[in-house]
Image (cartoon, rainbow, N blue to C red; front, side, top):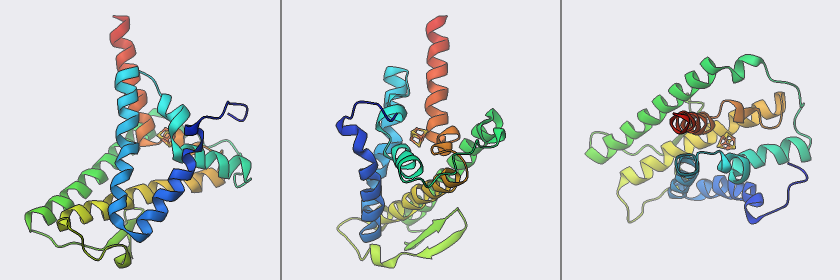
Length: 196
Ligand code: SF4
């Protein structure tokens, strides 16, 4: 990775920092994180490859820069179970369940069965007040509710990534990242289909 030719997309780690900073000021910017959800899937479905992960993921780049270049990683091998199939697919299932819960909470606000909660939920447990990041807009409340929920998921997953970056290797998060597991699964299914 260190000797790779630099392209514009080699600097997307800066975007990751900007993304989290913007969410601190206005939670509606959290919607931009959907790009990181949709693009890897598009690359995997259309190109049958993990080009996004290998080249364009700002979060993966950020872990590398902080871990390798800034020396924040112990660079120790991670426990094997972290990259095992059961853990990767188990974590993906858990992550998608939490994603579904967040969509349901958004729906409740949309349907008038719930009110907008201006909080960020860290590690799916700890509620942090985040009132300053939203004081109304031209959009209905459910749009902001999605922002708070999605930002919570993005922040939580990045914090987990930073913790395992410090404890183990720079990009340990990538071994069980739900997006990585999904794109890998898609590529495998497409490979099998092509070899039939
Ligand atoms: S596995 Fe996840 S964090 Fe790592 S490069 Fe791919 S999408 Fe980014």
